[in-house]
Length: 345
Image (cartoon, rainbow, N blue to C red; front, side, top):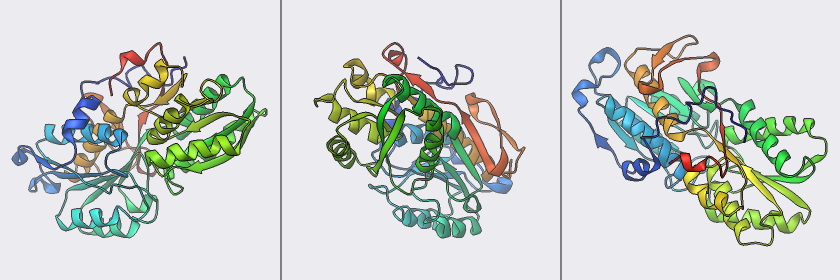
């Protein structure tokens, strides 16, 4: 197994598990808001999380981390969002949060530009904007909380599939939506990384739109279209689980390798039955926690989002804002049959 975390603690703090995510999301809850404050210290802290879509286990976990952090700060947490991830689906939720004078909106953008006008209006009204997981164009937000370096994510997945297929053969990518900035950045870097593997050929890239059934159907179509396919990379938690579900009951099980980004709880059975050998991820709960603390620091005026600004994210420790307003959580970790039992999210 290859481990890509920096210091072995990236996937720590697992007291905020997926079980908390299931019980913690789906509605706004209020803490002791008199101890939270907006910029200048005279406004209650009110942070809205806006994932790509609701009902996604990955965002359930990340939003649970955000909820716990906001409540620890004495603020009010809300989770809102569309049922389906699409470019324009998030705009109405941004507008509503801005009208309600939210201290900050924490958003994983379905499109780098489609939400730009709404976010600009929200910022003009005093709401701080933090993107996480999937960024907008930089002018539309104050900070971007990046889950891991794009280069590290791309290399982990290419190295993983190369090892599993003997470093030769045809592979395909099952992505989320065609407009997702994080997916497209990773795919571009994976294509570059493939130059180090001349005997591997990327034959197709398809999009499941972070929908389980669509991703399931796209997996079936890939195998029908490319009968010599040796492996699939799915850099999305919905996509990899749907692809694994298809492979687990098909003749391709054990013949077509699958890797990508997934959570241990959703992929556990597929690791145990041999459908998947290894996949990767960071801790999504920690990602939500970090995003919430960053949003609160902005809302309170403790930081401005400039390079060199520092803030503390609870038990995660101190973070520094990098170039282009980016804050990096860490690097991904590989999950296999040997270590997956150690994680619960």
